[in-house]
Image 1 (tube, rainbow, N blue to C red):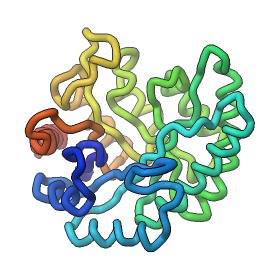
Image 2 (tube, rainbow, N blue to C red; image 1 turned 135 degrees about the vertical axis):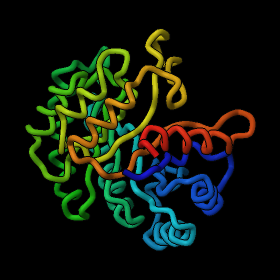
Image 3 (tube, helix red, strand yellow; image 1 turned 90 degrees about the vertical axis):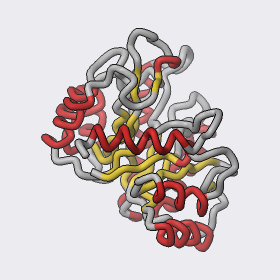
Length: 269
């Protein structure tokens, strides 16, 4: 397994060239970059030559752009227009992901809200994934459906069924180890989802806090890391582990050093 981080961890204002070099210096092999409507590392207006320049900078530093985070397009909104735009957004993210040489784009499939019920979200999310899947297959880019605090896909069995019902080879799971620690055990998710897991996010969580303030640095929370690593080996996972953190307020580059050491310990190095 290889060590990666999301670009959010870099000190504020640091560009990709400096960021790739810093990652290499601190012992990482990959970076996940971010996609948005505008701004971000890549966006709706990014051209192929611009994306290829990112690949060139990464290669120069010896870093792989391993995945792209496309976030929370409103694929299950009550607005048909918003849903249409969200699907177009996801399709563009897939195309750009292929341009930067990554094989996976993270997309949150839907969000349950007071005015958008769970069953409606489930059906809309499935419909959206089925529309997106042919584009993913065309570009040979996996859509990684991630489990987040969106009140949706709350158990590993449900996530497994969701992926199986879609039944498209390029729609898989981007599993976040820390996101459901307050309610379940990540090692069980890993074993149940098995080969449906395409990529892994690493976070840690302190269950005594019980809310979003419970996210803590790796090894400071209640994730059973030896059991998580055992489960990953059992399913034959040998891809990137991407830590998803922001920088420290002071001496921000230190976060990368701490993450690198913690990930080495998790990997038994």
